[in-house]
Amino acid sequence: MTHPGELLKKNGLYAGKELGQNFLSNPATACMIVDRTGVDKETTVLEIGPGLGAITLPLARACKQVVAVEKDSRIIPLLERELADEGICNVTIINQNILKTNIAQIAGTEKLVVIGNLPYNISSQILFQLITIRQVITHAFLMFQKELAERLLSPPGTKNYSRLSAVVQYASKISRVTDIRPNNFFPRPEVDSTVLRFDFFKTNGMGKEDEILLFSVIKAAFSKRRKTLHNAMSGGELGLTKKIVGIALKNAGIDSSRRAETLTVQEFIDLSRAVGKLITQRI
Ligand SMILES: C[S@@+](CC[C@H](N)C(=O)[O-])C[C@H]1O[C@@H](n2cnc3c(N)ncnc32)[C@H](O)[C@@H]1O
Image 1 (tube, rainbow, N blue to C red):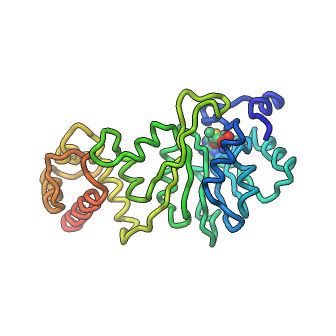
Image 2: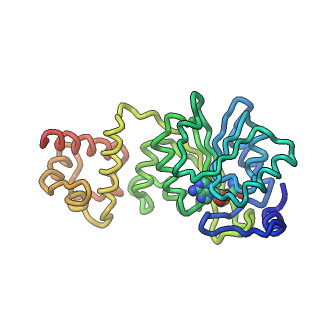
Image 3: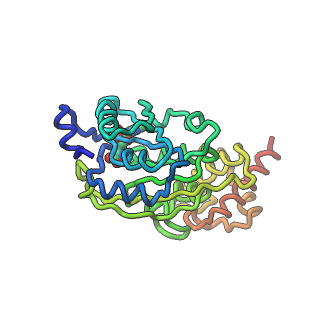
């Protein structure tokens, strides 16, 4: 693997901040990440943001096929050359914004493992996207800013437990794979990074509509973190009156003076079901 700084300079290019381009520059770290994923010659991998190929090269050697979605058309010829120089021909590069990519179509009849050193500015959005199509994913290994990773891992009742933690913990079992220091990247970011593993759950009897309501309830509950659930959830985009929220909380067995950050995922599900019943009755 050619050092990303050298490769960019030779081609008159630069790392774009708006695309979150902090390229892995330490091949040993990239290989360690690929090793930890446990992919094999049976696995089809979706790589989000292959960049200059730091992860793509060892990944392609380890798995059956890589489909790599990269938004930056400037760097794709460089990536293609790196792959060709190494004699790698099981990588398909798609020049697209991952947020607009039909991942289910890429999967076809197979299930995917998803891997990515994510562009940090849209990593939460990518995670939401993966959650909504998780039926085509077996598991995912994603790199985040360490701070966001900590939020995702935080259990209920802690200061970092957030809307995103609740949604992600509803949809997957999360585990920490490894932390990575800034000196492994070019350009060097200011913060540490963390790779997390996500094993996605099935929908557990929740239909698509039920999930949309659940995610809206979680969003409403966290919209005013400092307020009690009773106050935070009234009005807003759910359009619920204080009276309805009070009844829903009572029916779900949740004290109305609690705050969103104290609720477990199961309590959010109970609350969402109670809200759903009341909305149906009102119609
Ligand atoms: C943090 S870099 C990682 C690059 C490479 N995987 C590595 O580890 O060195 C993020 C990559 O995602 C790409 N990217 C940024 N936004 C994207 C988007 N919306 N869709 C697809 N790729 C994107 C960037 O161009 C960049 O190549």
